[in-house]
Length: 326
Image (cartoon, rainbow, N blue to C red):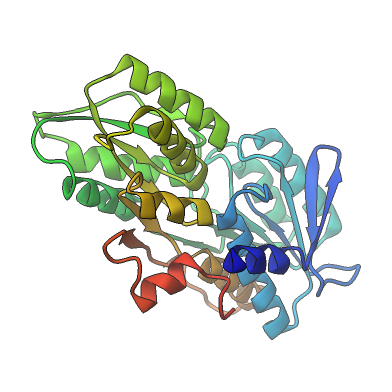
């Protein structure tokens, strides 16, 4: 509980303001004229991934004396609203925009307008069609999807029916992770993979979809939850409808509640990313690119699989509790 409170205190060092259906998250380091505007997929305070990424942003802002403004929507499914936020950011003429695109294709035109306006564009977590940004800083999500399958096979052997619960259909992150899972299972004749369920980044929707799935498919042996809300919703449904723990769940990301499900044996493993590193490197790279320095077109920040068996190692504790020591 102490760690959770610490996380909340750190996040609330910045002010969250609701305006017209959007959320504006203003850094304590930011004066009125912001030099970098950060637009994550959401600023939903219940999704700890983005909270940790924002702390990486704040840490880099302090170190490099950058002026930061973070704006976002209430959920990852608000694609049109995110487009409007990018348009508003362009009008403010910052040095750089850091964008976690909710849609692989639909954000491209407005992203190109930012570049044409002389604004440095960095994508973080999720990229854009054509790789239009100066740099993409993200997990290798295809490899991470394959890691999820390798983990599942440690708990489920032989013939099996699997399901995937994932977030927004048009997100580049989602597509890569799902392709990693499906390609890893391709050609296994004893394996059946059901149609993907889309939670739109909502834990409650993932919960309802998983309950319906379990009622319709008693043969299910494993579920892949490919982001934090999808994993949490699936875990809640399994806790309620699978008391014998016969169905295995492999998820993504880390939150206090996910850790509890891991300890309880409801969640067998989770692919943990490094969002603090993403946020930190995004700011550092944005400043370098704005100065005309050569930056890598793509940076893989890495991921690790954490299970109940290895969750107590020092290195994995740092990943599970990223606010500690930052």
